[in-house]
Length: 219
Ligand SMILES: Cc1cc2nc3c(=O)[nH]c(=O)nc-3n(C[C@H](O)[C@H](O)[C@H](O)COP(=O)(O)OP(=O)(O)OC[C@H]3O[C@@H](n4cnc5c(N)ncnc54)[C@H](O)[C@@H]3O)c2cc1C
Image 1: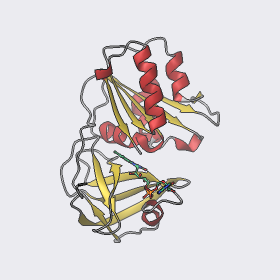
Image 2: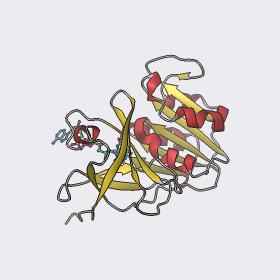
Image 3: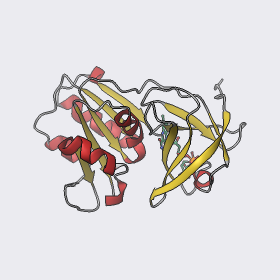
């Protein structure tokens, strides 16, 4: 039998639309967590929760959740209408897709950037390369934070638009063209199943051991 997550009521502190249909919802941090973990969120205590990665740092006072609206979805259209002091139901954090100090590649599509934002904001930036794939130029959420710190180790791959300093094409194309994909480093993949499967195939084809590929799929 499916185990229902235990949920607690929290108050929304604020909600920001950072790109069309893409929001960051914040609430006061009620617990400790490890960067990369997820929480369950729902509108009512009795509803099935949807999972969301925490996008803020381990020591931040507030928890940030980055999400995009599914117009036909059950939760996200409702969530996007929330205002300060409205209630949501949230589980404790859980999950093993967590960051470390080791050199690694962080590879994300869309809102799959959220756990890497948490790792970044926790200070796990040494030896990291961040690859973010998006359709439009406004898909590169939190770029204003990543760019100054990660510099050339922050690569934005845009499939439908062109822009200065942005790789033109999907992130799978960028990876295929990379001369050096070190087999000894860890590769963290987060986002759509399509991206995760394609990137995993590329990495394995280039000799990266399966154990060095750690994935989180947003289904
Ligand atoms: C580990 C994990 C972490 C995640 N983290 C994030 C995150 O940080 N940010 C984020 O934005 N998302 C994240 N997700 C995805 C998130 O959990 C939700 O799936 C997403 O927000 C959609 O929720 P919803 O209730 O609005 O849509 P849902 O009601 O779940 O619907 C999603 C889509 O499926 C379609 N659909 C629903 N039911 C049916 C059906 N019966 N037949 C056909 N189609 C149907 C809907 O039309 C809609 O397009 C994560 C998922 C996982 C598994």
